[in-house]
Amino acid sequence: MFLFRWLKRIIKAILWLVVIVVLIPIAGLAYGFLTTPALDTTPLSGVAEGAPPKALAVKIRAEIPRYQRPEESTFLTYPEWAIVYAAREYAGFVDKNQPSGFPYLSYIGRFWQDYATVIRASSAYKFNLDNNQMLVIIGTSHTIEHAIQWAYENTVGRVTEATAGKRTAVDIYQAKVAATMPVFSTRCRGTSFPMPKSVPACSPSSRQRTTAPSAPANASSPSASPTPSSKATPI
Image 1 (cartoon, rainbow, N blue to C red):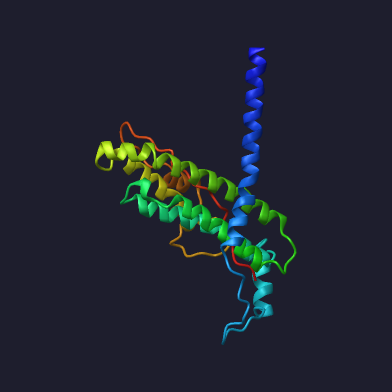
Image 2: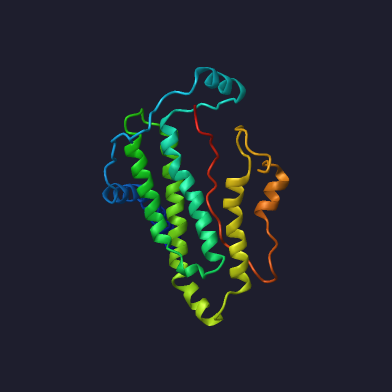
């Protein structure tokens, strides 16, 4: 009976976790739609939309495999990159400040606002399952990660900040680790699109240099960020 009761509690806890994870994107998108205005579709003065020269389009499609993608993906990949820039802003903040001061909840809300906005912007196109599935998954993980960070940094984190009185070796190492992900995502040549030679290629050695800073003695860091995929703008 004792084991049965514990098994029942474990199953119940797992079910609650599943329910919470499923509700995150629903609540997030509800917040996003309720806190963002309808799109202004008035054409901008002096801006004309049109297809690129046919010869250029044919040349690029022939030289760069899988270069062209559905037009709605141009909208739907924006929130993905917003996460990368959020990681960069977090790295810049903790480089000089204590992690407890970072607005984690605001960045959760911003993602879902961005997602709701691009849903409106792409509503005239066919529903893109792959892009939306990707955004729901990374948005949910982004929300969970930032919620946990907010809870920790504003409880245990504030206590340790108060007792230490200054930035510790762990804080400094955490800032270094936080800075590696956005640098790798934005400076590493991960697509077939021609980029300046100053941008390093995504070789195994560059990944190792980017993701493994040396740790000071007795220091560790739980910091981690999502890794969106790089995509080129379509023609």
